[in-house]
Length: 365
Image 1 (tube, rainbow, N blue to C red):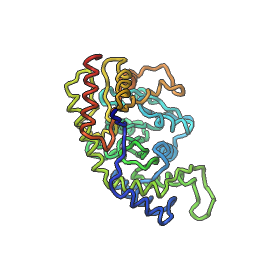
Image 2 (cartoon, rainbow, N blue to C red):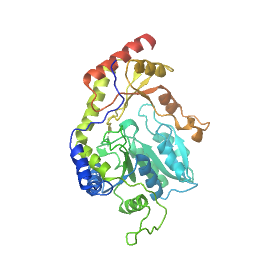
Image 3 (cartoon, helix red, strand yellow):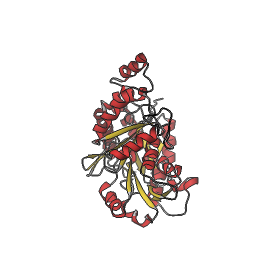
Image 4 (tube, rainbow, N blue to C red):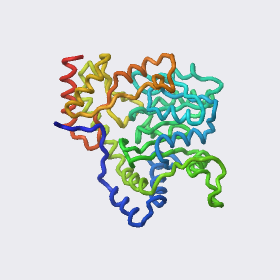
């Protein structure tokens, strides 16, 4: 039986050479690759600074702390996202205030933000879901009006563009993930980017447990051990050197999926707005007939095709449960499915996946 995984990284450049260099020199923890990776990633995002972190979650956490979000504050978060976007707010004792998403773009709906803003609101977290940017101009205008910070959760959007500008560079601070499924991966890890020098100095201090530069093991505040190893950075630098190729593969695969699905009325295709360039981190579709998504996923599993449901609506999780209505988030969460999106996926694999889905829908949709 054919086995097609959801994601697969592509190691085809200097990954082995750079990692081997770390091993041969014994510089596996700190070393030259960290600084080089940060410099190159900042340049890629068109920001002045970048700072590695242990994960995308820790990148978000440090950003919130550096912006002085504190216990009792409120932070706007899209209801449809990976749980880290909400959790990092809770880590510091603040409250994630959930807002519905746009049904067609799948990201935070700007028209629904202002009704959730109170005197306690300190920031807005936007999530470029599955690689498609949020409508940032509208959100930045709201943030400016109410004097709020904006944090970009760009963990899924390496190389995505909003009106020609890179994801991560569109707000006060941007955060990325390099976990195993991402477009570029270092196994685990993340990055914070910004052009705000003072903010990035604070983030670097947080990352190093506020270690005093002049006195060993003297710490000036409470920080976190969110450092990144030289080994990981070596792998990340090699991946970054071919980021344009990796993004092109994602977009090419998405276009091929769209070609097969374009006339299938039972499917809602992923967003691809004219003001955006999505990198289609995961290629997702929405099965329009309620209740059919899970049955389709089970069928695909039985024939060796791995899939993943869309993220759970945050308001359905026990720790964030509330009785408000988030119809778009619920609809997408309950009916969306991510299809195989690996970087070594073959055109024949995509044709096989689409053929099986179309056959299934002809019977059940």
